[in-house]
Image (cartoon, rainbow, N blue to C red; front, side, top):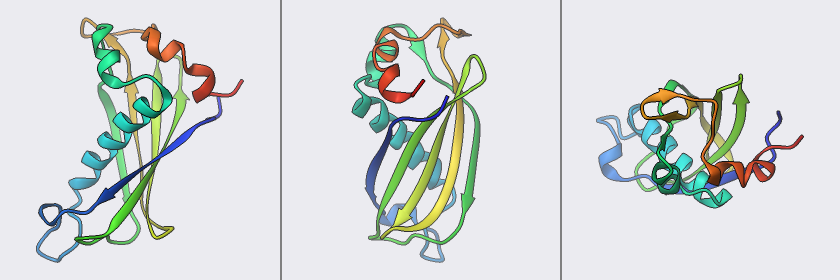
Length: 137
């Protein structure tokens, strides 16, 4: 299925996120990706806390980050997030970090829904309600 919805999260680079060279530390990007996922779920109408209230979790199974150009303290970056299916149970978030429209970082994370700690093909009701907004036919 192709993605039908994307969402941008704006993040201001904090000093604590930079390294001794003055650029965003490589370990910061997964944190930004997590924020972007939470914002994505909220924007689509299925806040992650509602997913959890329904007894589901969405652990990260795989994470990839590709660095293209550095970001620095004080920059305002946009993290564009899209969601695609990745097989029958898994789904993948795609991320693009841009600074003033210039691509800085790309990445993805692969997830599965779990219930009671066990992977499931079932989805939270709040996700089922908005699937048509997230995916096209």
